[in-house]
Image (cartoon, rainbow, N blue to C red; front, side):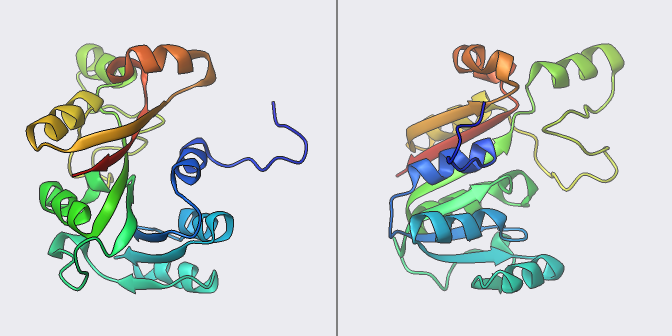
Length: 203
């Protein structure tokens, strides 16, 4: 239930806003139409920039008064120096890049901390559809048919946590999202019950 007078945001946006400190510098990779970036600027008084490959989405960002450059993050972030931002954000974009390992390494170089969110391909609904229907899953967190999906890589919560362990990446905070009735259980069995995962990581 909403509390009168209290602002409500999309669940993952709310957590991201909670994790980001006031007056920080933020780089949002794959910022889309700037909804999250705009909130960060307004709510956290952040010095924020975005990178987006879709020109139409960039026009939307410009309409919001945001600073966004037209760039493919798969090509790296060579124009940014080490730790030039307090936070780099990759929310719902890492699974859409061609070279996620390179993008993650560059994000950790450029940002003191990185916030990364992605759909969990191992959610039980996805497993059910693969096992019983023998088809590529379509779920609330993976809503596209196979022939129209922007996703190039399908990873699970466990995949990402294993990756961090192998790469000596520190997971500082985490949050898992699903329907309200399963929120508590999602924290106990995130790889099975969470539809989306969100992590705050650093080197």
